[in-house]
Image (cartoon, rainbow, N blue to C red; front, side, top):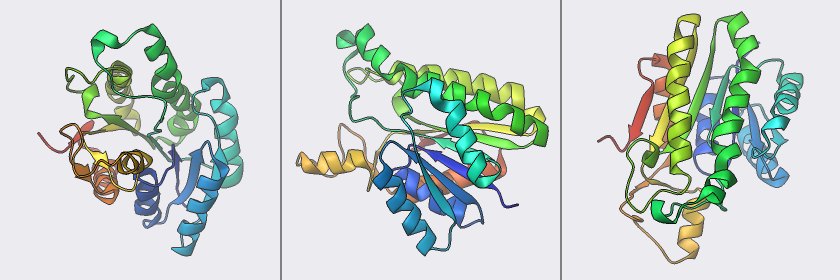
Length: 237
């Protein structure tokens, strides 16, 4: 049975590129997002490229629903080998730390921290039994290098990164890989880049360059196959 990657937060940018990159290697693809039309359209595009894919709708801001979601993917594909977790919320924005309050953090707490923890917990029995599996976490570079004026949900990304580092140290010996890609760029073809374009913004934004998501997906494939590093930053410092 061929391997399966589940892309959580499957959008038109990085999610689509990760699905295609891993799908080209023979993996089947589960696409998870809130909007049915998004995952169905992407599944059709992948099918046209000869990649087996299916869409699943879920609100990743509700961690209690993770076990049922995982069960649905398993029921369709029989297994899950890799998860890429990188949802994006138009309701969140980077704001100065001096203007960040408990309500801002609470708003993103489930999506950026609690749900990825629950996803890993739901997958560990399968991965431990098979002694193979991978959890790939996409964060912003502000989770690694705090920037004045760009806080808001960034501390949640830092907390998730802390968790992932500990997870990798505990599970690498059991054949389970945990890695994170921290992106300091606007991702082309993504919902965020579309919003910026609609606002009349082009080129770099806030000092961040624009990156092709295919390039990031290639980095993820390299991380997954080599398993020689926990973290990759883009652009490289």
